[in-house]
Amino acid sequence: QMTKSLYPHILCLEMNVKGALHCITDLLENDEDMLDLLLTEKAIAKSENRTLPLKKHEGVEMLLEEYARQLNSTLLEIDYMLQRVQSKQDMVALSLDAYRNRMIRMNLYLTVGGISLAFGTAVAGFFGMNVVNGLEDAEGVFEMVVLGSCLFGGGFVGACYSYLNGARAQRRTLAHLSQIEVMNRALGDMSALDYSFELMLNEKDPLTREKFREKILASEPDCIRDTEVDFLFDLLDYSDNDVIDKDDFQPSAYKG
Image 1 (cartoon, rainbow, N blue to C red):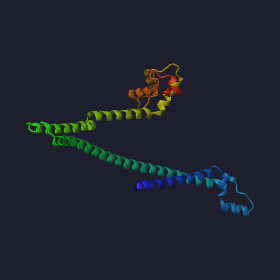
Image 2: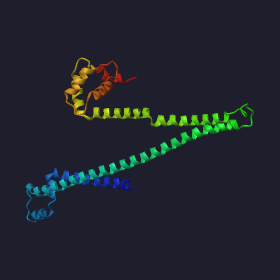
Image 3: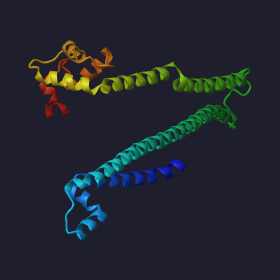
Image 4: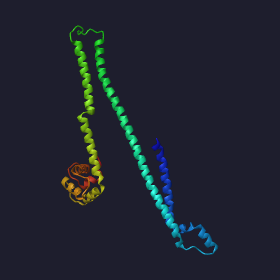
């Protein structure tokens, strides 16, 4: 709550500092305005019927430059504070999301447990009706019904738990995380991508996957590997013909 109330005040301070810095910058660009700030010397010169030389503004200019430097330093500190406040807010949001996810997971577990118990209750209700079914006097039926209901309910709970926390769910999560990491690495080195795209646009022949890999690696990227190259190639190959040509960058390639 404190960070939430502090953020707009820091933004207001940043706007005020930027406004002051803008005014000082405008003054530094006009020598006559800086000369007009010498009120005492202008009054003395006026009483002596003379004009102030233009070079007198140098003292004011040095003072305003120092003020501008201090304001720039203040802006840097404000930006750092804003980043810290934003990071704190993100951490609070992540904590709330984690707590909310735990509550949702607990609710899901309780729902699964309730469904498994409801199955046994439904079977007990069916056999508890005053309807003759021919199994009243059969030996071992009660034990079989109870055991079957318990096995079905336990199997349902185990299947749901395996689906939510089993190896398959973990593989899906790891696959999604791997895709995100590949995307971040592929789009992280934008200078290498710009260089590669310039080379591609200058090419007359379509680019195959191997040629595309050579163009990317020729720019000596920092964090792009074969996996990222394949991701970029599949991303740019809109026509799905395993080559990249200029038709893939035409507006018609985005249709459908």
